[in-house]
Length: 496
Image (cartoon, rainbow, N blue to C red; front, side, top):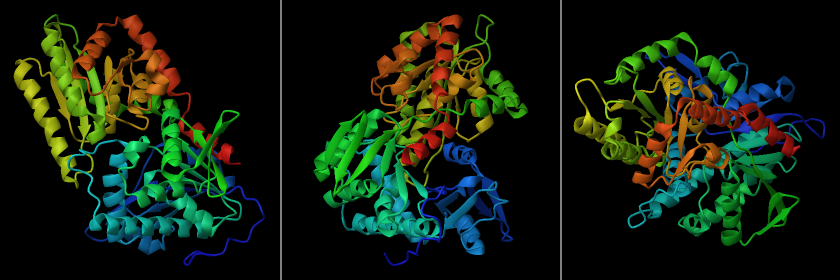
């Protein structure tokens, strides 16, 4: 047994217990000047899914302390958080040293693995893997080992463990070495890079990521495309055997076989529809209607809506350029359409993200200067995160623009049609994971082609109300076919 791990808890040979491991947990803490801690519960698919599996699973969520408030909470509780603050969920929060977390999370996960899978490197200049990266990779290994140790300690015999995402690619194999009795799954929420691009990584790192994930009994992805690219990497990098039998894809390596699964993640329709009709959303709609205004014909202006974090992969700048192209090529839309662009800052501790956020603002200002009139602001840009305002924009959308360079799924593409009051048309990048499900009812574009995107927005704006409502209805049906609860329960069933 590896040092730091403990013996399995005494139990029957099989267990219904479920454990989830993810970098971010279901609750975060802020610390006031007087030392008091305030807990804030999060949402998302994992929270919804765990609430659906029932108390009989004795579920435990293992996560990392992300900031000083979290670390203080972990220290005060010994890492086992107060259930009154977690919504009743058993949570073990790991107080991983700040320097280890920084190197693993920012140095490797977000600055290397994320960039690789989203194919975002400017390869004439980057990446350049040197001694600094070697040290960061060692910390990433330490960070993953901390999770494996905690899971080994928490799991009953025969428990099921679901490991989440690119932060924890090494955990499945490390945990299997500690606890071979467990059923282990891994899920990737990002795209997966083609083998030639994945091999930008140092050879030992590329092999380590794949071997780590293949330590799971089953590793799963959001789309068939990402799953097949993963197996291609296993073949090319590891020399593993990939087979398909009865429709199930499997990878055999090192004497064991890992099954490959696909689980699209859909929108939580019931929650979104209820939340979108609360009073705070109605207030935001009134505010947005005032900003959108009416056209020269006295009718409400059409709305082109996007809601994104300022991730480099979201392609916001090219989306703005496409809108500028629309106003240039089709001047009939001037003063008759407003682009509601919500670009919420992300990862501002990284210079490249700060620069990108600034460029979004610069291009929006440039469009408003070039085309705006005293009574019409072509781009209404909001950069302060406001969920109620986002839902208000969803409800108002005539056209939704979702044009990522590359995206594991993109739930915004699924959420807007679910919430839209009058129905909306969807302009969708073929590089979004959601394309696999939604393409039949969307205006699909090459995200790098500004003119094609402008033409697609024009065509979407021309849809009459009945056609738009029909498209939106079909999109919403598809979008809610795999709600978060089903997404998680399907993974558990496949591991049984």
